[in-house]
Image (tube, rainbow, N blue to C red):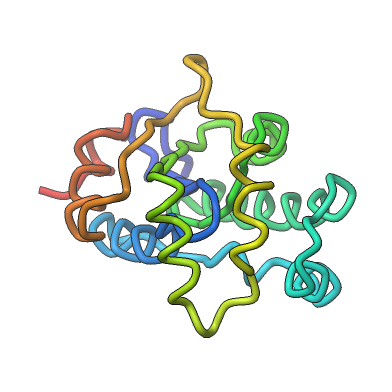
Length: 180
């Protein structure tokens, strides 16, 4: 049995630069919506992680297999009707188009914050491969959501619970996708 688009549980990609809080907000959002969660960093190859750990930004050739893997995860959740929330920087529109090609109804939540807050958050992380030195390259590459892209932008400065609650109210989700 297939669900119609207006009743389908949403597939959401929480996007933004390093340190924005994608993982924390995405986990909370997935809990609020009772859908599966995936950490986009888990889809990176060991070679990509080594490259970023050394302070070298990934290029588009590095990113393509990663984006396709995340797109496959989204496609599977959409086909099953379970929906899901996954993190992915998806800084450029063409990266989001790769994800949209795999899951046409995907919704993007673009988290934003000041450079100062981002640098502070990154500097406090001890168990992550992304160094603060790559923040500026991510900010330079960032292409905000276009008006024709399904989703919303949201300030990630407040506490993550507030951001997740606001996201549920802000995102264009089908009525069944919003918790009561």
